Amino acid sequence: MPEPVIEARQIVKRFGRVRALRGANLTVYPQEVVALVGDNGAGKSTLVKTVVGVHPPDEGEILFEGRPVTVNTPHEARDLGIETVYQDLALAAEVDPAANMFLGREILRPGLLGKLGFLDKKAMRRRSDEAFRTLGVRIQDTSARVANMSGGQRQGIAISRAVTWASKVVFMDEPTAALGVVQTRNVLDQIQRVREHGLSVVLISHNMPEVFEVADRIEVLRLGERVASLRPAEVSMEDVVAAMTGALTFHEKED
Amino acid sequence: MATPPTPTEDIAAEELLEEEREPWWQRLVTGQSTAIALILIGLIAVFSFLKPDEFLDVNNARNIATDAAVLLVLSVGLTFVIITAGIDLSVGAVLVFSGVVAAKLMNEMGGDNWGVILAGLGVALASGLGWGLLNGFLVAKAKIPAFIVTLGTLGMALGSALLITKGVDQREVPFKLIDTVGSGRAFGEIPYLVLIAAAVALVFGVILAMTRFGRYTYAIGSNEEAVRRAGVNVDAHLIKIYAIGGTLSGLAGFMSLARFGTTTIGGHSTDNLDAISAVVIGGTSLFGGIGTMIGTVVGVFIPAVLRNGFVIVGVQPFWQQVAVGAVLIVAVYLDQLRRARYRR
Image (cartoon, rainbow over all chains, first blue to last red; front, side, top):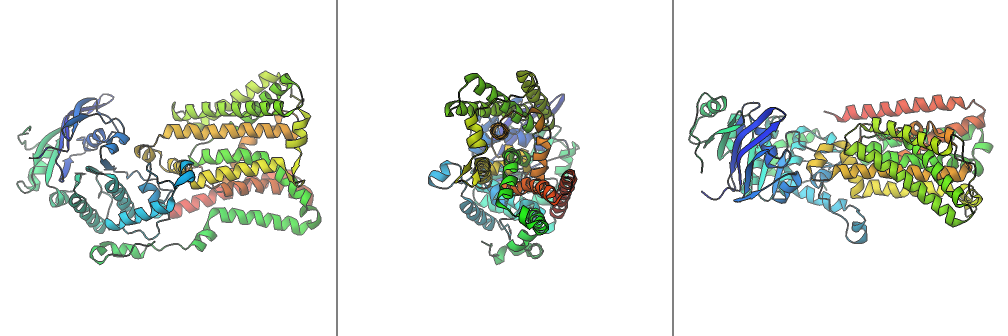
């Protein structure tokens, strides 16, 4: 086994009196798709948010390529090459897709105008169009507001943004939850393409057929802890569901 | 720059067909700024038709623009604030406070020269900036709703102005200020007050439309959390926005002082509502994320033209308030319609 790109160990996260994570682990190897599954309230989204700096953990450590790191803000996660597609997509609906792609990373005009903060909208639009094309996201009018776009297109913009900027890992929190059949197909293809580009993907999903289709490995969370790390080829969907609900316990091997 | 469909990845082709691009002329026709600009043009046309000699007169146009100048400066700052889905009720009170401290300082210094005037301007801008920073800090850091924060600073600024003056207007202002900035004209034609307001609107309009600062303003109003997650310092940006609003209120206070030669403490109690109305009539959405500076300019001129036109036509000027109220409601209704059309 190569060294994990991300390893979260014994993560504890409390919200008031609620312990959302009680010593959760997460391991992500280079260029693999890990599905993070678990029942509602198992702590999937919270675990992701502790790793990507939205809610820094109360206890536990995060290793990035073997060295301990602290990730206190999304900015620090981004600097490590980690990007996130949030469940709510985190898009600014009243600006255009290119503005969302480059949010926080705007390209400025060359020279004095750039120093004054003038945007190079053309360059941003051109590079966004390239990214959308690479990932098969179809947007006719790239100058229209995101608010005018369909759920599939918005998902595509959020994924394109994450993939464009990530150099190591992309986290996706239920990227297909709100999508129809066709758009879901698109997103799953995009995940494959992201892996082919050499990145790792952590996919939170409730949809077992989807998980079994794209994941190289499945990590199961239950009540704020990792209870199993499984390979889709070696287990059945029933096994995974059983692990999620606690009907079946797998021996957690610690590396 | 349309994306050519790649045959191998043409899965979502069905979805494509229903996503027709709206041509620019259609956007121009259906855009809210256009509708409001048409209302303004219509008003001008009606008044020009009714009283061509009096309404369509250079002096009259100059009057309208001068009347609108101070309100425009307030509204420019407020446009930024409202695009972030915030509000600033304190602009009129900060205007009064800034005017009062500027007048007080200039009187203390005495003399009728540019040094005194510049000192007055400096202190007006600084006090506006101070109130703006306080607003911004309380909104961004203490997370108190902007409505409450600025309602509080409205009272504090106005109360402080009254404390400083003991409730009596400062009537002593350097004559040079009134004579030049207050009533002078550039090239003998354009009042300096109008020139200042136009420059402010132009500069901040460019900032809003073309710079990263403007982009963050729209994005924050659209989805503050998304901007935060994109690694932008949202709190600092909001503080800057309220600081700009405060500083422009300070400038407006100094302009008002130059124009009237007195602090007019009692005359600005509805400035905040007038400015908010102007910004909203101009198409800026109270829900944030949407708005333009050109819209705000139009929004400032509609009440100004109405007031002036009613006086000339001989309608009781009180009708202006009624008419502006109706335009305001229509403007927000248009905004709602537009949002309903976009939301899926």
